[in-house]
Image 1 (tube, helix red, strand yellow):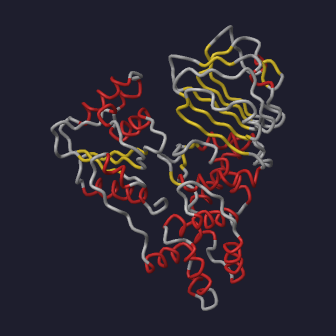
Image 2 (image 1 turned 120 degrees about the vertical axis):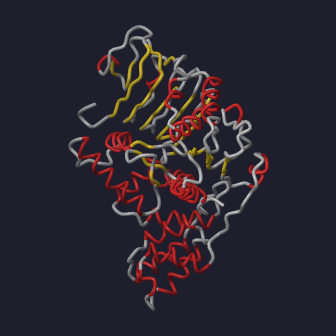
Length: 420
């Protein structure tokens, strides 16, 4: 089940095996539902110290480098987290040949996926009642043992469905709460009208929505919703999160980006302690559990009065006619040439990101593309080809950057009030 602790368990397994030196090398990669071979290779190469792979663009060459690295005689464990389908392991370069001392460990929500990948499945069960109570107490505190609170705490815990992800989030939200806090939580559960999200239990939605509603300060909610506008399993950089938060007006009292960054770090700390954000690959990044992200995406229309669109690996423009009228945030990622519409009509759009990962073929942006973006505050585009004379918000592009006729370029524009 989602939220049962698969990823957490894999991180613990990696840490323990490295400490006990059962394997000479342990590498972990998050696969996710949108299969991105380059991303998987990049993550494994990082853990294996394979620096040569970063500069290689050809898929066969990248696979060959990774295969040779895995067949150098060392005992290696590869952990592939959040797998959704049968993986083309050989095409990725994950081929141990005759080396029997190397292993692959996968996690998936579906047993069939394990079978399709020739793995021996082990089911991760829900917590039992004693385990659930101990975990709840660890995060909510000793207050749940009080005579007047315990009956309410037991009812709230029952709503968490014995899922560690949910128990931690609700426990932290009600930590040290008074009797009225627990009474209010029980009423909110009773009155909640959960959204229907594919593969997500309604009770899980209700508990995570309550955790969101109890977040303090209010800017923490804004920060969490902003994180949901990034792609699934993204390593979100603190600096990028800061620029978006400042441009969106979430940090009105911060006069400089340095002050804003410190504020964002404080909000991220709150969200991590609440179980709503995860540690990233390093101290400058943060991640979001896909279940938390699904819930946050469904909350956006109620909180911000618009919807968000996030797609990766696209091969064609994902919107037709007026289907983008309700979007307030769009983030698109492609790895091949994409034909853009003549004009993007999105009257609610506040943030737009278009990232082209194909370094050989740039995307051409029509001169009239930005004409229908009245409320745009943050613009991020990479791997773009432009013609001189294009406009942004009705202003000459030259006002912010120099471009030549059909020059190749990347850029970011963030509206910080009177300064861009």
